Image 1 (cartoon, rainbow, N blue to C red):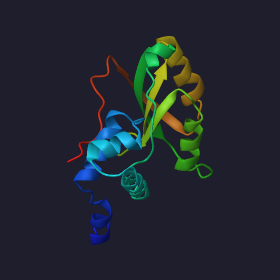
Image 2: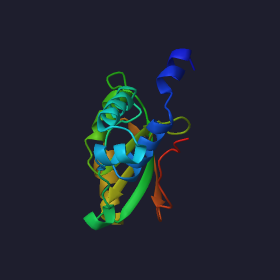
Image 3: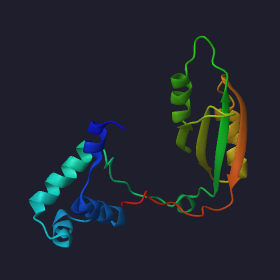
Image 4: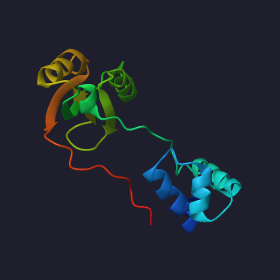
Length: 160
């Protein structure tokens, strides 16, 4: 890693505390962060702006429970792609992006070109999505589906 990149990624104890507070509650007020860090609200505002500029903070998110919305099946699907002269990886990626039940798409190495995470209402809905929407994309030559029986955990990277 270059020296410039190392410098851009350096964060101090107060920045780490800010990040931990935001990870616990993304809606926490700057005033409450300032009180917890024992600094002014203006200082917190400036620090958060710098963390955003450094792309350490990408945004703030609301987390939804898929089951509460009627999506009981979670699956991961590996996609093999045969690129034609008229299609690019980006073209296929953009078509996959149009399927709202697909919540993540990763470019990966190995047997598959892409790995997607998809939610469906049930197994029949999943089958319909795979056949009618995913496998109908001409350049996708093979899929392999892995059903998630239960999410063990999700977490953020540690702030050390």
